[in-house]
Image (tube, rainbow, N blue to C red; front, side, top):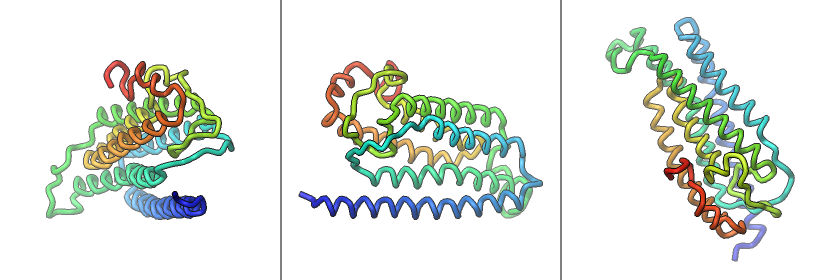
Length: 240
């Protein structure tokens, strides 16, 4: 059996890793912002404002929906959050870099590459991406609000944890993950950043794996969860 002090040390190490990831990605974001500033006159401003506006709405929705408490709990598989944090940051930043590179191709900054390697900006794709991101944000915020004090960024069982079956949890067991997946697909499409969808694919796989781990924990720890599984779907009502 692992000593409690060893668990605390592991927890401190994981938090340190999360801080390092956040700091590195913040610096990456600053450099990306500098790149945007340098190329501002060439950018499609409506595209950029749409992207920034949706990200800002996402942050506001998260802040408004979070109703966490100081109730202690038992966390497990914390490394999954570190991986999700890394790729989520990448998902927010890399599409901007891809968009900038595509723009440079169109402007002829790289004459040895063909400017038609990438499709021209398609605002219909932008609208589709923005819609997916907004719907995903709404579903996730609704889920966080419904869970209230039981919501956690980790796989965590609170000391007085209870099964929640109201709101979106009447329909599916993991609406917050469903919202995340819609966001992951939509965000790169806002800037027509098709290569960045590879990051979305990795994130979706990570969400599905974490969902599996979370369900294993909930089955063991939460009374009635096994029966709840029998009468609900994971992510898509009536399908899966």
